[in-house]
Length: 275
Image (tube, rainbow, N blue to C red; front, side, top):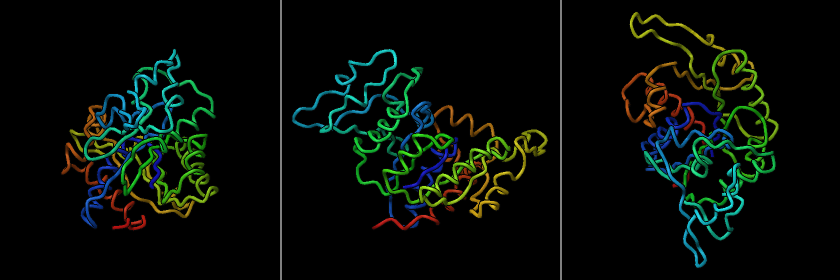
């Protein structure tokens, strides 16, 4: 299991982990869990809509029948799910995905206390029919709160990847995230510098809008590996907003090559999946 702190790199690296593993071994199944309960974005970035279906048992009912108790907070979908039924995740680009965003309206806020968040994370992990996955990538929000601790303490994790912009304010969170993983004995595979440089499309001049080499320097300070840079590019943003990962829509672009390099570094540090 891989765990990543979030940004637009998540869906691109998921696809590339699958492709790289396919080249190195055989076709591998990759799952993507949206660990951001308060602000799920995987449905939009992966161009997925709709409610998960339930696995059929003798007493199975459509998922909507379990959502009748939803009120203004809209959060009874998970807590009312019977143990004998599992939710079937949605799939696109060959990636199996599960998100809180599949269970609530797109504009509905999630107003939950910590225990409810921890319960939701557990159900998204354990009450989903993931099938036979080789890798499960968990997209996490920044910070060291209930979601991070719930995942770290309840399931085995092969490694964590910290993704941050190079600005000082973002690096504070990145450092805390790395230190938290160390405390709960989760290996940190390395750090990724996101939005590292902006190149003017007209004159090609490069500007380090968020600072230069902040993540690289932090990796040295923490004695961790630096996995690579992701540029600040309009195509990445546009493709993300349209639900078309740049590694799929523009596989030969410089941005896609940057993701490929990072994904290869991640796979190289992971245990070889069983045949």
